Structure formats: structure tokens, C-alpha cells
Image 1 (tube, rainbow, N blue to C red):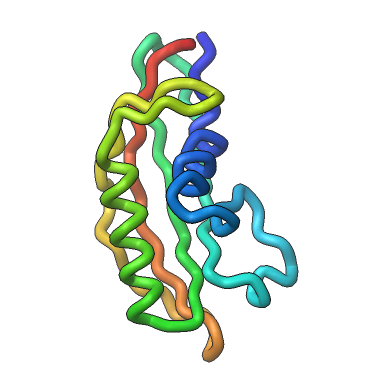
Image 2 (image 1 turned 180 degrees about the vertical axis):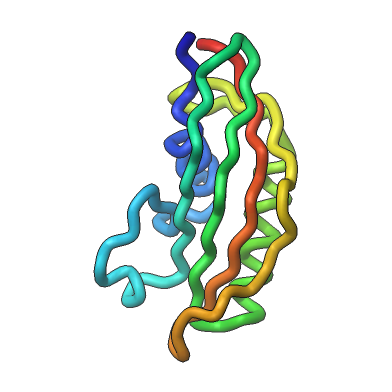
Length: 121
């Protein structure tokens, strides 16, 4: 059974809200191009309906701006369903709350996890 590529779908959804900030891999110079959101997904293609776990990492120069960006993106994602070029995202639910992770003095990082529900294409 084939499900939408959840990582590609979430990058596309985030890019529709704020172009140029969502990535499936960070480049070595990503700190020069902040803000940035890294999307990491565990693809689960077992059943007709599937739940996938996705970790979102938010990078920014400013703590308040980073938290605001994360909350805006999460609210948008949870306002599902979303139709994307790789398929339908039926729902997005929070798994873990947003939390700050120590990173560097120049970069603030927040992370959270969500569950993404899809059905076979």
C-alpha cells in the first residue's frame, strides 16, 4: 500500500504558508538562511489508514520569533485536511508540546512532534 510521502507533504504545506523555510535536510550553511524548519518523518505504509510520526525542528535567531513561528506553523498544520501534490493529509495531531532545545548562542531551536494521518493513494 502506498501512502503520500509525509515529509514532502508537510514541507509543501509549510512552504505554502512561508516560502523558503521548510527543509527535509539542512545544508551546512543553514544558519545563514534563518528561519528554517526541518521536517523529519517516520513513514508508515502498513494499512489503508496509517499514522506517521513527524518531528519538526524550528531554527531562528530570536527566541520569541522562533516560538511564534512554531505556534503559527503548528496551528496551520492542525487545520487539516490538506491536499498536496503528493496526496491528502487527513489530520495532524500534537504528540509532544513545543519545547526549547539548547543549540548555539546565535541560533534558537524549538522542537515538537505530531502524528499525521493519511490513507492510501
